[in-house]
Length: 161
Image (cartoon, rainbow, N blue to C red):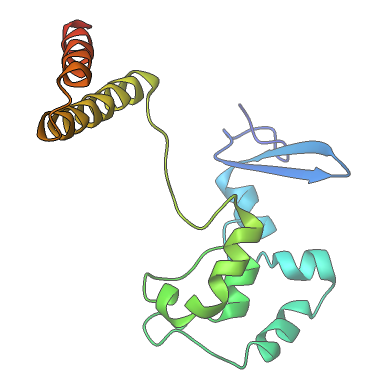
């Protein structure tokens, strides 16, 4: 896939923009992306683009000038790029981070994805543990009929592949 600007070099930078529900894609080579200032995260100020020139400076003032002592990133830098400069930024800007993450994502805890086969195995293991726990309780309470039913369920689960 060649660059959409120069039409000569292979594209290495891929931008996607959604405006009014319509998606536009731009493929750029490294030279064209550098020329347009796309690869420099501080050169591409999303806040300036959306809110007008000078918006990023306004956000810098409103954040109280707080900066990360390790990397020097400010809250305005985070709002511009959508990324922190280092892991210490999470501690420095942590107080306002949770509401922002809730707005950006479905929650504030990363759960990841689990393959369906592994999920089935985990559910089966959890069910076995629960049945074994219930079996011990039934035996301790001398409820032998219930214990026999639980034992049979455990054997049935253990035999299944």
